[in-house]
Length: 97
Image (cartoon, rainbow, N blue to C red):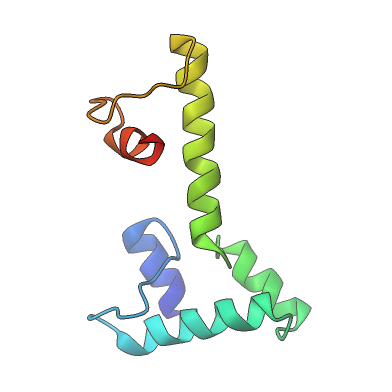
């Protein structure tokens, strides 16, 4: 479907709610997230979404990704004081600061 096509193209299922190329897809994904969180989806739909990597709370997944990166940084540097302009991972530097 359209979400699978989006994932092939972008590498994830986090379609922006205001997705200009396909506003209906952005709206649909937002609705699926809401229904997922409210436990209003059948187990078959949940399985189908999870099978393609759908995240009901992408901001939470992003937080855990950065946390894992911070753990790796600490292993390599002995501390968690990532500089804001850290060239190897500028997003981690911004997240920590």
